[in-house]
Length: 388
Image 1 (cartoon, one colour):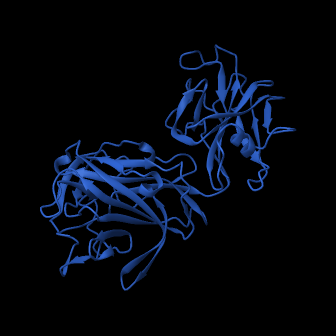
Image 2 (cartoon, rainbow, N blue to C red):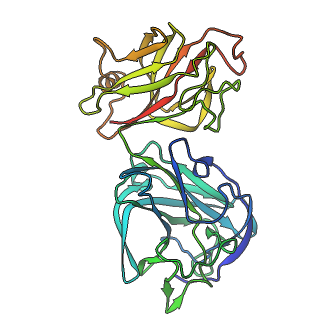
Image 3 (tube, one colour):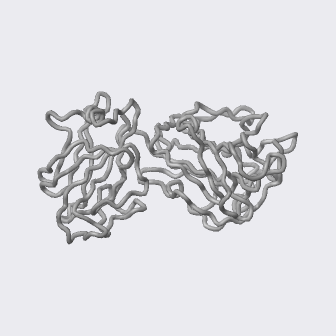
């Protein structure tokens, strides 16, 4: 790996995929850089000497979030000198659970996710932007308290290792300090050496910081506490997509409906193994027709759906159709198949550890409450995500 003096660039950031800059409800936002969540115009440094086959990494202390957390998204800054837009590269994302240090050298913990292995492909990034990837469809647990998010440069479309790359991974310097004396936060993988602390790494006896590397990598992530059942998709104003007629529900509920229940709330009881989970949607209209919906992925920004916001996406299955009693709809009940059995019968067998997303949409026939457009004659509960 040849080293080239870092290039300071004033970049007007594009932000494709706001998830990594504004996490969904119940998630925590992690970054080492000092730039704003949505950076706008900032001075940053392009680490032009990072070659194909090398990587940037950040260590995040996630112990305050919970004993086990799940990684829900990750982001990387890919910047071209001068803030030029449109240069592309192909990268990979690998996440590790934990890190230890000996004599200033890191040993990374167990690998818990490799995007290339999981999908058979790479991630395309574009300059000059913080590029984010939604990981909500994967189970990526961190149990050590330290998440190590690493981005690997695989294919560049401009420049070469010998002369440097005009577009590359970047840091927050000079907006932030060089941080040559701040250790164990930023990592760099150097061909022929392996992982090193970016603040103290050397090549041919020369320390990289502050001439060839300085600051904190523009690496970010959203994480949430792990648990078999977690609420998400609230119609309380916490999503990027608001309730279509400004009809916000109570905190944690779906959007408000025409009779003023503060929105429908989806809850659960029972266990995932064995599957005894029962879903209950409360706060509907007294006798609403209610459809229990399952999806394989989630929209982190939400989609306008009737008078509410739906986040359940992917391969959708209508598991149960019920009529509410006193504004409450419950399933499965009586002779109904369990959720996993019903899902399998509908063509979506759920493997152990599989993640699925649930909401209930229900009839609200008052067409004047939230007229079409943008509303309609139904509404949606809050959601649950369940790891089976």
